[in-house]
View (cartoon, rainbow, N blue to C red):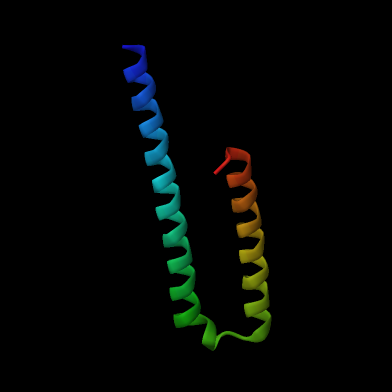
Length: 70
């Protein structure tokens, strides 16, 4: 009985990783769409600010994933 619970728990962790990967893929897809549709019309200053904000977001996302061991 204990072994079955442990197997189920490990399967749940694998599913959690799959959802993280799907979320990250959607994040990149959203950024690609946003940059394709809207960034061509913005000024260089606005593009630089957005780029810096995205760098900070990806830094914290990477740090979060490193802490979780993903």
